[in-house]
Image 1 (cartoon, rainbow, N blue to C red):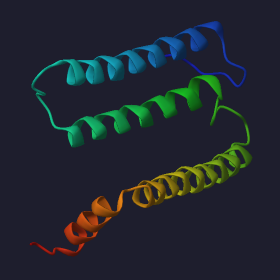
Image 2: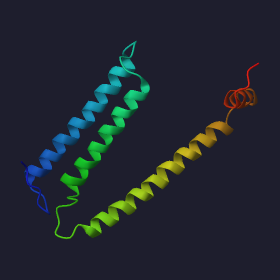
Image 3: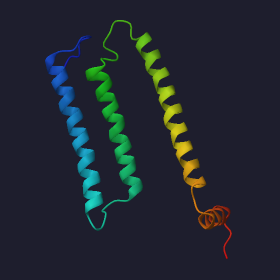
Image 4: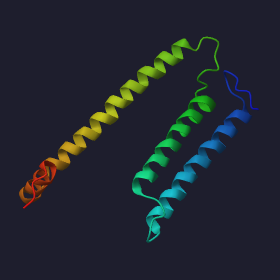
Amino acid sequence: MIKITPHGTLLSYVSGFVFSLALTLTVFVLVNNHVTSGHAAYSHGFLALVIMGLAVVQLIVQLVFFLHLGAEAKPRWNLAVFLFMMVVLVVIVGGSLWIINNLNYHMLSPQDTNSFIMKDEGIHR
C-alpha cells in the first residue's frame, strides 16, 4: 500500500498522475465510443451517471494524492476549507446552469416558445 506523507513523495505523485490519467482516458473512451458508434450500447443517462461517478473518483484522487487532504496532523482546518469550497462550487455551477437554462428559454423563437409552454403544461392540439 502506498503511504501518503504530508508533503508527498515521488511515488505518490506518480501514482496520482497514473490514476488521474487512467480515469480521464476511461471517460474519453466511453464518450468517444458512444458518439462515434451508430447505435449506442447504453443510454445518455447511464453515460452521464458513469461520467459523474468517475468525476467523483477523480476528485478523490486529486485530493488525496496532490492536495494531501487528510494526511496532516490537524485535518480540521483543511476539511472546513474543503467544505466551504464545495459550497461555493455548488453555488457557482448551479447558478451557471440556471442562467444557461433561462437564457436558452428566452432565446427561443415565438413559435418554439409557444410549443415549449404547451408541452410543459401538457396542452395538446
